[in-house]
Length: 149
Image (cartoon, rainbow, N blue to C red; front, side, top):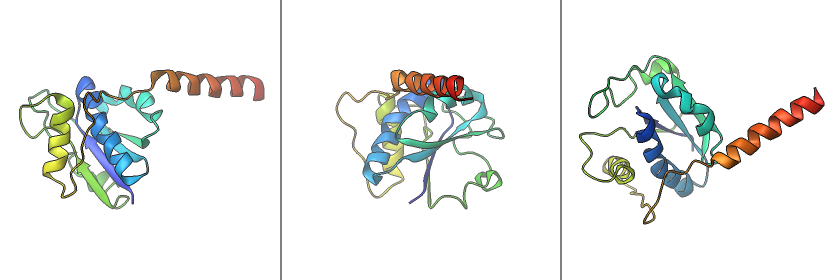
């Protein structure tokens, strides 16, 4: 099943949304895709290295406002990005109001309210960004291109 998750930002909020995205990936037994606003697209190279994310889309036309919560929480005109047709399911994980819980659990609550198959996070779950893995992959790609071409 092709699944897309979207999250409007900010940088830290995107990181705190990752435990929910990872839990969904585990439940499905496959990586999922993530869409973020171009305003926070500089996170994309690091996000793309995560094993639970297949693709990271940086949506240039998703202009978010610095409001609480971020607006719009859903990318406007997802169809214009060609994403609706490409996915069987799209989950919009942006906060529906001012967060009332620790941020990873706020995103989880947003997901669970919109889904009949609730996810659970492990106690103490933190954002998972494997920076060492990302650095090793970049180094390996660079070393391969340096010696091979």
